[in-house]
Length: 478
Image 1 (tube, rainbow, N blue to C red):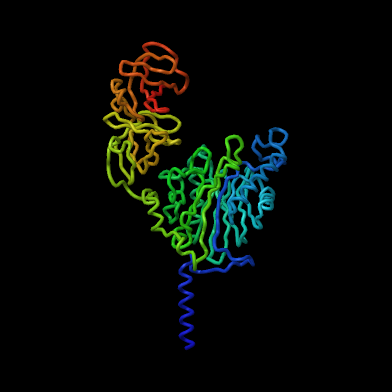
Image 2: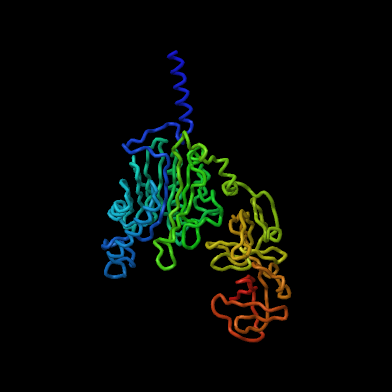
């Protein structure tokens, strides 16, 4: 009978352990009440400098030489603590904190008992973490030969197991690409063999096929942006998803709480005149209530029902189509476009066309392509921005050696009436009066990129870009 009871007890223990995100269950080493859920967040607080000069501040925050003051510091500290109390995360990674004392002040005001900080030499600010749970261990990783922030790792042990959080702040996009990739390599090497890793912070790279994080994702991580719709993907006032939370796939076996990834955007802290930061906090929840919370746990198979991005990033094109065949349609699987020529470029992206002269605009703020480049690309996602169709996620697979004459890839002016957003007209002539352009093929609005187009008769413009602005067809000229 004793043997039978022992066997039953052992079976229960094994069954219970199967629901934990790490089968080596570790008890919480502190005396705190065990939690059923953990909310984990990241937030770039934007330039949290104190009211003293230490020599490393940006010029805009030097006391006595700028508008920054100790009073402004204390006001920002109060507002941030109010936001953190409302967010109520158990663990939150922070970026752009000037020093340990600033972090300590914020922790005390916000009700956090535990905190850690790291800052590389001569950097204006560093990264930190606030936690309501005891931090078991910390480790710092530096990016060699690159002037950037440290990567801070903190380890935790809770009733559901052990996990590690990596707090990051990668170099901005204006920095050389090799330096930004160096930071990604350090993080990849640091996290590669870590069970139950959470990588979060301001990575200064957009979500999608060209993200600097994709090699890390391919190692067995999931970017939580993939769990929500594209229209909600924004962690920055410029409507970009440059802050990220990546989870080891092990969390999706039983611990990630379904639909818990959110952007914290409260009108109390964000308005046109006085936003608390240029970034928004993002957060998610881990479910540690294994006996009652199994229904709320999102498995990896359920995750892929919400989004196909991860498979898109790792797969080849499923079909080959022409630009005209995808225009105005939602691309649902990777689609190859061959021999497309760049016919127009501005600060937001570029337009491409094939031999029929019909163009499609591609959203890409950081493209290094030039007019006349011919490329092959895989399209992952299309959408409409202000009712104009565009390619919003893609990957260039080939850039041809020679730059081509774009004339065969543009439209003639007699096609003005049928021209759509993304088309380029090779040459168009007519009269300009008060922002209107009258031609023998119709009248449209006209806009000059560099300066206002002056009134005048019989004016000719080369390579005019066609768009629709406020419901009216418009040509954009240089």
